[in-house]
Amino acid sequence: MFTGLISEIGCVRSVSNSGDMLRIAVTAAHTAAEVAIGDSVNINGACQTVVEAAGSSFSVDTIKETISKTTLGYLKGGERVNLEQAVRASDRLGGHIVSGHVDCVEFVRHIHRDSTSIVYRISLSGSFRELIVPQGSVAVNGISLTVAHLTDEDFTVAIIPTTWSMTTLPDLRIGDGVNIEFDIIGKYILRFLSSRKPGSRIDEQTLRQLGF
Image (cartoon, rainbow, N blue to C red; front, side, top):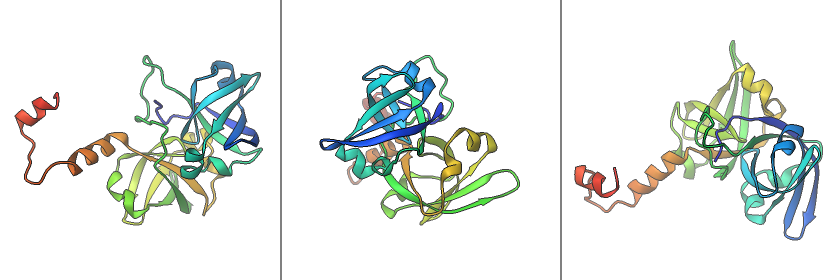
């Protein structure tokens, strides 16, 4: 589990084919010094498992499923990436609950600055509209952000200068794809409601049966 608070910006050292997978090597001195083989690292919003760690670099193997659902397959040497190590039980949950399981890739539609922030407008596919709410949480390339405005076709997030400086958001351009993970709590609630039988209702007895 992650929180969406980026701990380090890494630099892709190399991307190479490894059978049906991609071996992605990332230079990131702080992260490489703390991880061990088998540890989870969030790279641009996608949870990956460390397969090598030495010196100031670590490597992960990205499988077909991840390549098909994220932007990791488009990474190139020299590209900057957002990194976050798995949260410890004793850590503060400063952002929101992030699983590192990307729901979809959406695209930056517009970027502009206002008096206090940098605002990104990001596309929103129809099948995911029910998973996002105004002022709710969303992870964009692994960054925990708050939805500022929502329409049927897109949503906006307003970035404060601190987040801007501590992530790869300055690298994004209009048309770029970004990894999106919607709030996992909302996903479970939607799943529960959609599986209810017609005419069923939630009452005290139902809640007790569900363990509340």
